[in-house]
Figure 1 (tube, rainbow, N blue to C red):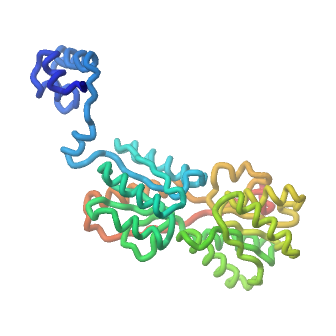
Figure 2 (figure 1 turned 135 degrees about the vertical axis):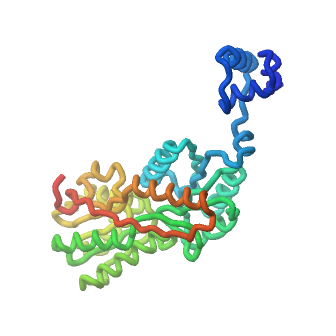
Figure 3 (figure 1 turned 45 degrees about the vertical axis):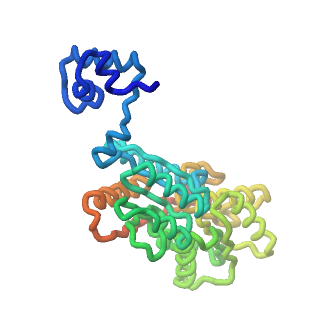
Length: 334
């Protein structure tokens, strides 16, 4: 039978109120009484129900977070940054992986709400199909979207300016002499994929570059990068540069080019997006658009706390300017 606080109090020879004060730390008691209560709790293998206590107080000091795919190296980086920020405020993070599936995403939302999290941070799988999952979140639970967002959904958001980031990459390779530029990215399902694609189109038009080179859209994975590189090679007209929608794709492109002895950057320039940990370790080191993880996390928690303090706070959307990190894949220094 599970020991109760009443059992602990009886064994220690104190009142239930005194035992509660010792075990919750709500008020100080004499060292002698504290020792007796702690010894009794240890002897009975008593487990304090912190969740029940937190619910009585109206909060659990927990925040839920859902990401589309934990295998994508960008998401662990942002999760770690968010968790560090929460730890500084005494809160814990419950993390869920939506596995790139809006049905699973919706289930994860329900699971976290059932655990009485104080707020939700979500990177939506889809710019449209994830709306159902977000609509299921009770109005009493603050929600912040980070990196990606659901179109026409009234919830706080923070992320980088994806369109600006891709524009930086296109302008950079053009400044290095690239005239023909291919775009390899993900299918236009998430807001990030949509905005990066739009950024590419606008940059090409702004610079007056040819618009008839491929836009190859698949997934944000290295396997797709390899497949896209093969498709480019088989097209018979290799572009001067390949601008990729994320670093994983770019790493796949680099790997396939290296395998087929297509020299980067001498024959073709390659860029990525995110600046994941492995970007600088690619062969050659990858020029990429850097997302400021710590700044994104700090703004995410600021938005969450603002909504916890005042649920009527106007919805805020914060776009942070990314930076271009130039490395050897476009002829930069190592």
